[in-house]
Length: 163
Image (tube, rainbow, N blue to C red; front, side, top):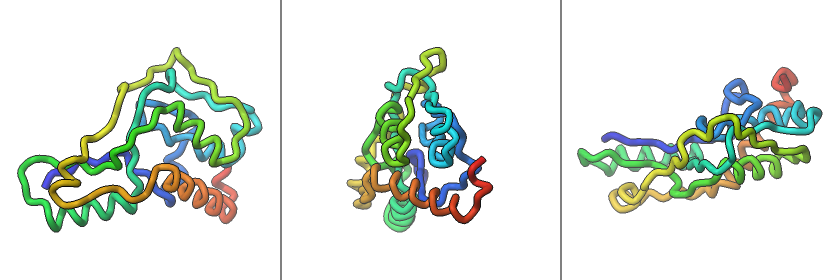
């Protein structure tokens, strides 16, 4: 079995993997640490690369784990299978949603001198649905909200995460 995964987001993502810039070529959820930790709140803005028009697909980690188990148990075909949510979001909408969920009230600035990256990153998940019945069950907003809540709780226990 050869499986291709969408960008996987999860509530216990290691904080050191998160930085302070939204890069549309990297998948987008890379600045919540800075926003939640308050650095950008003090600065009053978050700079996002590109125009914000590029789109990305994310799959919540619990759905990803379920998809991998289902594929391993039920999929025995030579063709690759895509494991994704079947939903894509623009970097602009992603940045606005992260700002909303983190309580960020500053300004989102889209730096058009930086690249948008690949214009669209979305998987056709039809084969997974038809071959072994996989469909993601965690909607994007819920998964992102869980991730933000986990980070806030982890930060409260480890003040070193504010850097």
